[in-house]
Length: 255
Image (cartoon, rainbow, N blue to C red; front, top):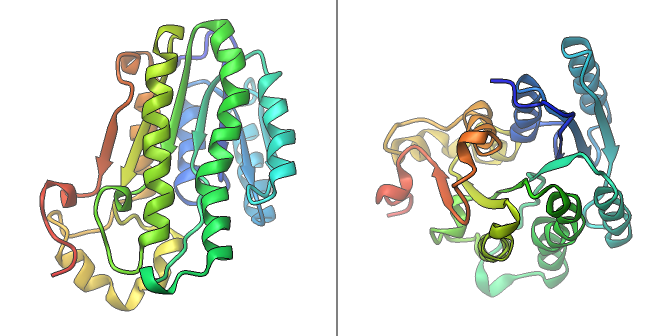
C-alpha cells in the first residue's frame, strides 16, 4: 500500500533500534520519506540508513543524532520540523525507563524520564503541527505503554510519564481534529526489545501471565503504527490502542 503521492515525510524519534526501527521500515514500504532520530546508536543508525537508501532509492531518508533529555537540542529540532513543508507524520517512539518504588523516587532521574518521554513530545508537536495545519492533514502517534493503563510495582514514574503522554495526545486529538490532524496512543505490552533484557530471569513467568503466552514483536507494534499513518485510519483519533497479547482484557500481571 503506497501512500506517498507527494513526497510526504514522517519523523520517528528513537528510530535506530527496536520498535522504532521497525516503524521506520514499515513506513518506507508504504512510500514515505522518513527521518529518524537516535541518541547513542551511531552504528545501528548508519546501518539502517544504508539499508533504507539501498532498498528505496527514490525516497528520501535521513538520521539525526538527538538527545531528547537536552531541551536546547529538542528546541532546535522542533524548529526544523516546523519548517518541513512535506511533514505528514510524527511518531514519538523514543523513551526512557525509570524503575523505582513509589516511596524511593530519585527526582533527578524522574525529571529526566519525564523530559524524554513527555516534555520532548509536547515541544516536537508544537513544530510538527505547523506544516500539518497548512496541509490540513497529519498524523501524530505516541508509542506509550500499557504501564499508563495498569499499575505495576516499581513503575510509578515510568507509568506517570506515559500517562501524561496519553492525556496530552487525547487533548491534541480534540484540538486539531478540524485541521485534519489525528493523534493516537499505542500502548504496547511486553515486547522483545533491549529494554526487556533486564527481565530475562523472569521471562517465563511473565509470559505465563500473558493470555497469548508470549512477548510481542517490534514488527507487530510497527504494523499498528503503519495502519494509523494510512488513509484508512483518518477517522481514528484520540484513541488508546493496546497491543499486549490480551493483558488489558483483564489478566493480572502480578498476583
